Length: 183
Image (tube, rainbow, N blue to C red):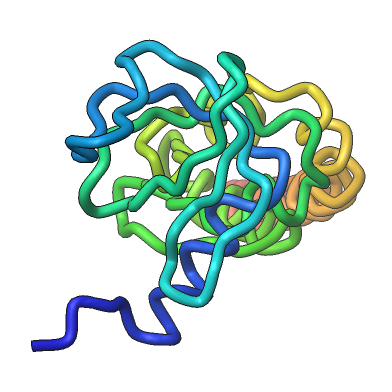
């Protein structure tokens, strides 16, 4: 039986845990050299078997196996935005979708925010942001916010123009109907 992850799974792991990702060990299944629970470390690289090679704050270097060892991601701030959030999950009243970049997140917010609030989660299940309709309500990463608003604000303005145009068309229709009734 092959115990190694597929190449596709290894690529997913590499994107989820790029160099510089900070983790904290919760439990490690290594009877000879376990890292104590609560120990923090930094991912140096991910090998072709999907193992995270880390340098821990206690000086130890050790491989961490994602499906065997239990750990938390505690910081991605030193990692470029496109790598930090290579996979996100958009959740809305009318559907969920995996999102891969700032453009897709902005499009998801504008499409689904018209019908209700939107939530964007990391693949680890942590909330990155939520919205009030098409507008950001809360966001946990200000650097990501800076990138997102550059794309999102022009989209929001287009939606506002569209809504204003529809409202003006409705006003004109009502005026015409009022005139027809008075005759």
